[in-house]
Amino acid sequence: MKIGNKRALVLNQDFSPITVCNIQKAFLLVYLKKAELVVTDEMLKLRSINKAYPFPSVIRLISYVSMPYKGVMLTRQNIFKRDAHTCQYCGVSKDLTLDHLIPRSKGGKSSWNNLVTACKKCNARKGDAKPEESGMKLMRMPFKPSYVMFIRDFSGTISDGWLPFLKTKSMPVLKEG
Image 1 (cartoon, rainbow, N blue to C red):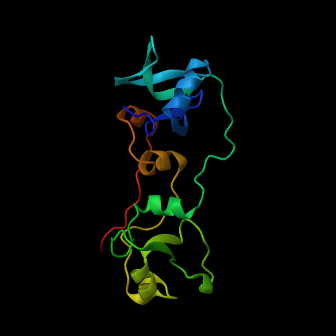
Image 2 (cartoon, rainbow, N blue to C red):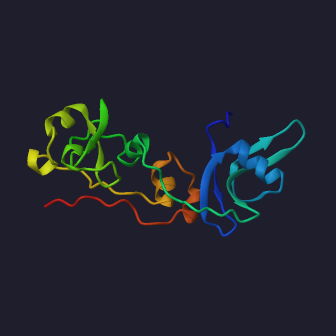
Image 3 (tube, rainbow, N blue to C red):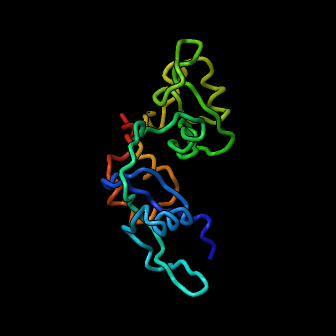
Protein backbone atom coordinates (compact mmCIF):
# COMPACT_ATOMS: atom_id res chain seq x y z
CA MET A 1 0.00 0.00 0.00
CA LYS A 2 1.24 3.46 -0.88
CA ILE A 3 1.20 5.84 2.05
CA GLY A 4 2.20 8.91 0.01
CA ASN A 5 -1.32 10.39 -0.03
CA LYS A 6 -2.22 9.51 3.57
CA ARG A 7 -2.18 12.39 6.04
CA ALA A 8 -2.22 13.00 9.77
CA LEU A 9 -3.75 15.86 11.76
CA VAL A 10 -1.19 17.71 13.89
CA LEU A 11 -2.38 19.18 17.19
CA ASN A 12 -0.60 21.70 19.35
CA GLN A 13 0.19 20.77 22.94
CA ASP A 14 -3.20 22.23 23.98
CA PHE A 15 -5.00 19.91 21.47
CA SER A 16 -5.83 22.74 19.05
CA PRO A 17 -5.35 21.79 15.38
CA ILE A 18 -2.29 23.29 13.70
CA THR A 19 -1.94 21.60 10.34
CA VAL A 20 -2.11 18.43 8.31
CA CYS A 21 1.07 16.59 7.33
CA ASN A 22 2.02 13.44 5.46
CA ILE A 23 2.35 10.16 7.34
CA GLN A 24 6.13 10.06 6.95
CA LYS A 25 6.50 13.39 8.76
CA ALA A 26 3.97 12.40 11.44
CA PHE A 27 5.83 9.14 12.09
CA LEU A 28 9.16 10.95 12.25
CA LEU A 29 7.82 13.47 14.80
CA VAL A 30 6.56 10.62 16.99
CA TYR A 31 9.72 8.54 16.53
CA LEU A 32 11.91 11.50 17.51
CA LYS A 33 9.68 12.08 20.55
CA LYS A 34 8.63 15.54 19.35
CA ALA A 35 5.01 14.39 19.22
CA GLU A 36 2.82 11.68 20.70
CA LEU A 37 0.16 9.50 19.10
CA VAL A 38 -3.39 10.55 19.93
CA VAL A 39 -5.36 8.53 17.36
CA THR A 40 -4.08 5.66 15.22
CA ASP A 41 -5.57 3.93 12.21
CA GLU A 42 -6.10 0.41 13.54
CA MET A 43 -6.48 -1.01 10.02
CA LEU A 44 -2.97 0.05 8.96
CA LYS A 45 0.58 -0.41 10.24
CA LEU A 46 3.90 1.11 9.26
CA ARG A 47 6.45 -1.66 8.82
CA SER A 48 10.21 -1.81 8.77
CA ILE A 49 12.14 -5.00 8.05
CA ASN A 50 11.65 -6.35 11.57
CA LYS A 51 9.11 -4.13 13.34
CA ALA A 52 5.55 -2.82 12.94
CA TYR A 53 4.54 0.65 14.17
CA PRO A 54 1.09 2.18 14.75
CA PHE A 55 -0.20 4.21 11.80
CA PRO A 56 -0.63 7.83 12.98
CA SER A 57 -3.93 9.58 12.28
CA VAL A 58 -3.75 12.36 14.90
CA ILE A 59 -0.57 13.43 16.70
CA ARG A 60 0.01 16.03 19.41
CA LEU A 61 3.21 18.05 19.71
CA ILE A 62 5.11 17.64 22.98
CA SER A 63 6.09 21.32 23.11
CA TYR A 64 3.65 24.18 22.50
CA VAL A 65 4.19 26.02 19.21
CA SER A 66 3.15 29.65 19.12
CA MET A 67 0.96 30.31 16.10
CA PRO A 68 0.67 34.10 15.71
CA TYR A 69 -1.43 33.96 12.53
CA LYS A 70 -3.87 31.12 12.26
CA GLY A 71 -5.86 32.09 9.22
CA VAL A 72 -6.50 30.94 5.71
CA MET A 73 -4.57 32.71 2.96
CA LEU A 74 -6.68 34.36 0.28
CA THR A 75 -5.55 32.55 -2.88
CA ARG A 76 -7.24 31.51 -6.10
CA GLN A 77 -7.01 27.83 -5.16
CA ASN A 78 -8.44 28.43 -1.67
CA ILE A 79 -11.45 30.28 -3.16
CA PHE A 80 -11.97 27.31 -5.51
CA LYS A 81 -11.74 24.90 -2.52
CA ARG A 82 -14.20 26.97 -0.47
CA ASP A 83 -16.66 26.95 -3.39
CA ALA A 84 -16.16 23.20 -4.04
CA HIS A 85 -14.75 23.89 -7.52
CA THR A 86 -18.19 24.84 -8.82
CA CYS A 87 -19.60 27.99 -10.39
CA GLN A 88 -21.56 29.80 -7.69
CA TYR A 89 -24.12 30.94 -10.27
CA CYS A 90 -24.93 27.82 -12.32
CA GLY A 91 -23.15 24.95 -10.54
CA VAL A 92 -20.91 23.70 -13.37
CA SER A 93 -17.33 22.65 -12.65
CA LYS A 94 -15.58 23.44 -15.94
CA ASP A 95 -13.81 26.55 -17.27
CA LEU A 96 -13.66 28.15 -13.82
CA THR A 97 -12.35 31.58 -12.97
CA LEU A 98 -12.84 34.09 -10.17
CA ASP A 99 -15.56 36.74 -10.14
CA HIS A 100 -15.66 39.93 -8.07
CA LEU A 101 -19.23 40.43 -6.81
CA ILE A 102 -18.63 44.16 -6.72
CA PRO A 103 -16.45 44.66 -9.81
CA ARG A 104 -13.02 46.15 -9.28
CA SER A 105 -13.98 48.98 -11.64
CA LYS A 106 -16.66 49.95 -9.10
CA GLY A 107 -14.36 49.79 -6.08
CA GLY A 108 -14.67 46.08 -5.29
CA LYS A 109 -11.72 44.57 -3.47
CA SER A 110 -10.13 41.13 -3.73
CA SER A 111 -11.42 39.71 -0.45
CA TRP A 112 -13.04 36.52 0.85
CA ASN A 113 -16.46 38.21 0.90
CA ASN A 114 -16.20 39.68 -2.60
CA LEU A 115 -14.74 36.77 -4.59
CA VAL A 116 -16.59 33.69 -5.84
CA THR A 117 -15.84 30.88 -8.25
CA ALA A 118 -17.61 31.39 -11.57
CA CYS A 119 -17.50 29.68 -14.93
CA LYS A 120 -16.30 31.84 -17.80
CA LYS A 121 -19.81 31.90 -19.33
CA CYS A 122 -21.48 33.22 -16.15
CA ASN A 123 -18.62 35.64 -15.49
CA ALA A 124 -19.03 37.08 -19.00
CA ARG A 125 -22.84 37.22 -18.61
CA LYS A 126 -22.52 39.13 -15.32
CA GLY A 127 -19.96 41.45 -16.90
CA ASP A 128 -19.14 44.69 -15.09
CA ALA A 129 -22.20 44.59 -12.84
CA LYS A 130 -23.27 43.30 -9.46
CA PRO A 131 -25.11 39.93 -9.51
CA GLU A 132 -28.49 41.53 -8.70
CA GLU A 133 -28.01 44.11 -11.47
CA SER A 134 -27.53 41.33 -14.02
CA GLY A 135 -30.37 39.16 -12.67
CA MET A 136 -28.05 36.44 -11.36
CA LYS A 137 -28.36 34.67 -8.00
CA LEU A 138 -25.59 33.10 -5.97
CA MET A 139 -25.90 29.50 -4.79
CA ARG A 140 -24.06 30.45 -1.56
CA MET A 141 -22.86 33.72 -0.12
CA PRO A 142 -19.06 34.04 0.01
CA PHE A 143 -17.39 33.95 3.43
CA LYS A 144 -13.98 33.74 5.03
CA PRO A 145 -13.49 30.22 6.40
CA SER A 146 -11.89 29.78 9.79
CA TYR A 147 -8.66 27.82 9.94
CA VAL A 148 -10.32 24.81 11.59
CA MET A 149 -13.23 24.95 9.14
CA PHE A 150 -10.78 25.02 6.24
CA ILE A 151 -8.95 21.91 7.47
CA ARG A 152 -12.22 20.12 8.18
CA ASP A 153 -14.27 21.05 5.12
CA PHE A 154 -11.82 21.94 2.36
CA SER A 155 -8.62 19.92 2.74
CA GLY A 156 -9.91 16.78 1.06
CA THR A 157 -10.88 13.53 2.71
CA ILE A 158 -10.42 13.53 6.46
CA SER A 159 -10.28 10.65 8.89
CA ASP A 160 -13.17 10.08 11.30
CA GLY A 161 -10.57 10.23 14.08
CA TRP A 162 -10.00 13.92 13.30
CA LEU A 163 -13.59 15.03 13.84
CA PRO A 164 -13.49 15.53 17.63
CA PHE A 165 -10.59 17.98 17.13
CA LEU A 166 -12.20 19.90 14.25
CA LYS A 167 -15.55 20.90 15.70
CA THR A 168 -16.75 24.30 14.52
CA LYS A 169 -19.72 25.84 12.77
CA SER A 170 -20.42 24.65 9.26
CA MET A 171 -20.52 26.81 6.14
CA PRO A 172 -23.22 29.47 5.84
CA VAL A 173 -25.71 28.76 3.08
CA LEU A 174 -27.76 31.30 1.13
CA LYS A 175 -31.43 30.81 2.01
CA GLU A 176 -34.10 30.71 -0.68
CA GLY A 177 -36.81 33.35 -0.70
